[in-house]
Image (cartoon, rainbow, N blue to C red; front, side, top):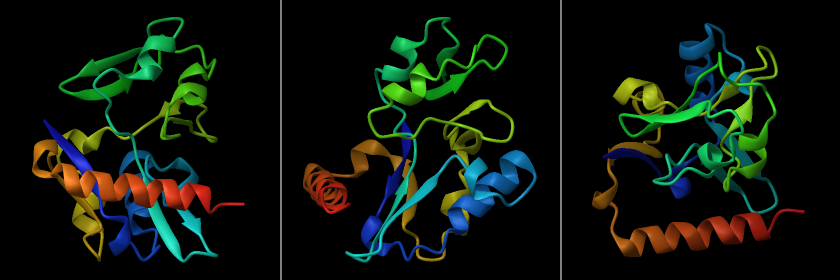
Amino acid sequence: MNRLIILAEKCTGCKTCEMICSLSHEGRCNPVESRIRLIKNEREGINLPLVCAQCEKPTCKEVCPVAAIFVDRDVVETDAVKCVGCRMCVLNCPIGATVMNPVTHEIIRCDLCGGDPLCVKYCPEEAIQFGPIDVVDARIRRERVKHLVSFLGGMP
């Protein structure tokens, strides 16, 4: 099972990932419609691309009152026809990667571009990578969690 691997230490905050994501999914460069979000901590000089972790047991799916969220080929998706827009999935995403598109009012999250993520292809610093999750060893994952905790703890 392949996942996006974020190397925050390489991210320069250029927002290319947001632009290519919104362009490919919505047909326009509009970062608020992107499925990947760049979080900046200006004080600490840290940039963190935030994207759906494709959880093994997605909390968003568990809390959906109309069963609009499903997993297809290891990708968490939302059935827009079933979705009633209650935003329970948005409120319960543990990392804040499920959002409502402010233009279309549909729930959006990373769909891995069908297995060929464009954010990976277009990231000039290679801060976003795609591959089997087991490639990232426990030490690297621990470092990333410490980085995220310190990043979020340093925010006002």
